[in-house]
Amino acid sequence: MHVSPNRSPLVAAVDGGAGAANLPPEAQAQLDSLFVGLSGQGPFSIGYPCNQDFDYTPLYRFLGFSLNNVGDPFSGSNYRLNTHAFEREVLADFARLAGFREEEITGPDRSYWGYVTNGGTEGNMYGLYLARELFPEGIVYFSEDTHYSVAKILRLQHTRNIMIRSKPDGEMDYEDLEESLRIHRDAPPIFFVNVGTTMTGAIDRVDRIREITRRLCLPHHYLHVDAALSGMILPYVDDPPPWNFADGIDSLSISGHKMLGSPLPCGVALARKTHVDRVARSVEYIGALDTTISGSRNAITPLILWYALRCRDGNAMREVVIRSLDTAEYAVESLRAIGVDAWRHRHSITVVFPRPPQSIMQKWILAPYEDFCHLITVPNVDKATIDAFVADMTASRS
Ligand SMILES: *Cc1c(COP(=O)(O)O)cnc(C)c1O
Image 1 (cartoon, rainbow, N blue to C red):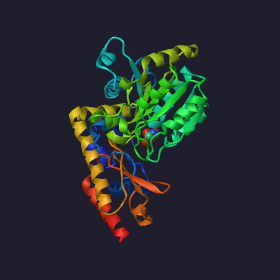
Image 2 (image 1 turned 90 degrees about the vertical axis):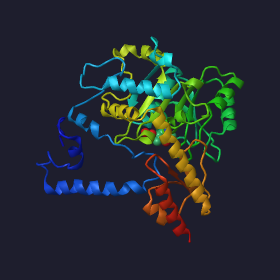
Image 3 (image 1 turned 30 degrees about the vertical axis):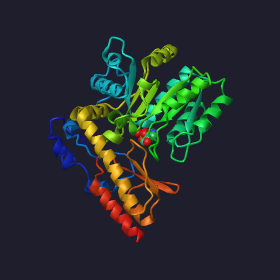
Image 4 (image 1 turned 120 degrees about the horizontal axis):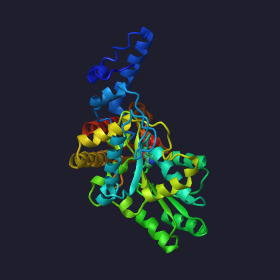
């Protein structure tokens, strides 16, 4: 469907019809049935961390252009239909949220580099790529609760790696980490740190990992943080654990379609610019500074992230986050009140409980794992939704 830039975005959103004149009726019916099916899923989708509470209709007119953010957002592109300027604003905002100081962001010697990715996975791939280029002999340490995509990335990049045990609550087992590091003292460690694991929202402690490197005299190491969901929670809570660039990390990945919410998957990769420059020099012989993993890149998602951040200033975002944390606590208490052994980590909107009966799993879109399960109170999941879920749970138990 071609949406001309000057059509009303709302019309384009709702009718789906104009421009569909050439579409055979069967095909139109297929689209309509997809739309109806998708519309019915929303209220029961509580297991995945994708905030559905958004309205980007003012951006629909940009779908009329063949936009492309090919290349490095900071070095410009010959392809003029791009949104690099907006992308750079988004990156500055995320750099601020992730602990860079103001003079490191706006001063003459910018300290961060990054780009808008296709999602958390690409940001993790970028961070691990940077780490491996800096430490070709390095070993990646990651916990068994790490997102499944990381094992694939490590295989793809052919990087040495060691899986570390997790504690029952999903946090890295630091004793196992220390023992493994001691055995492999000759190789520089690359730490893959979870700031909010997928299944339980557990946070691996940057400070504890750094303490171990000091104890074992391992000055050359690298810390990549996967903050897919919690990267948009921790900037807004009181008393967060150490997790970002202010605490000495080297790179970071955040998903855009999780806590912020986006109809298109996206994310942000950030890294210390000194690392990126060193690696760029080492690949200069290719003749181009091809810094991003994807070549042609989505130019709409930077606009979406920019719009999301501009519609809600820091205070508004804090309110959204606090409300989600409140809802998570409400869910824990409501489930416990009916005898379900629910719990959550501090600063986490992931509520963990034993896997419910099949009747519940059929109606509610939950994310099961072995014998437990979770729901995630992203901003569109409100207390009424939790009440409805708990009512179903009560019925299923009686
Ligand atoms: C969702 C998630 C990812 C993957 O992010 P995508 O945006 O889906 O690519 C990676 N790590 C964690 C902890 C996640 O929760």
